[in-house]
Length: 275
Figure: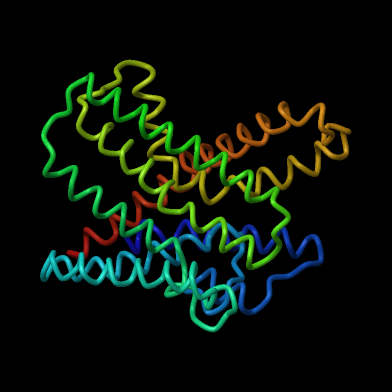
């Protein structure tokens, strides 16, 4: 995981720093520290999307417990996730900066839920087609209702911390909907072949690079669209499609031409030394 996660992060952080420097907005010391270590000393990251990796790396560290005792790992994860959600939702301590975000956030709750879903999927037998469709419809309904409530909350007039607290009440619903979909996909026997399989297989492998690089492509394209007069309400659907396509395209190119060769050489270097 260290080899897979950190080298691509170093690459995007350096690129982001060069772009910021060209715009006379150099990275702060904390942006460098947080982004290169993937630990949230503060909540300043460059690019901003890298903040989620802080939670991912903390999750990997906690997962080491599973090699000793899986039940203890689940207990630690449950305490960590539920306590973080409670601190975030019911006390607002996490929003007030009184505790590190790794311990006062709703996101750990979702990581824990994902781990539970994975373990359940390993114990669940094949799901029939009819039951898979029914579960997928239920999950979609939960997601649609949650999204509708989320939009209503954002339009309610709440501001700042109060808005964030209200939105976090929906976190479990989104997690449950996603968890059901994962169970269905993992156990329904659904497969793809041919070109569709090759395309999605490539995008799956490139997803990390797409995640890291999409914001850079979107920031540059947003500026270009604004200069071209395509930032208005009428042109927004087209602009959104272009932004999504640009993020996927740049991430895919970086994966194919830079990340994959780089990781192949790194893995070969470690393998040659018995690591």
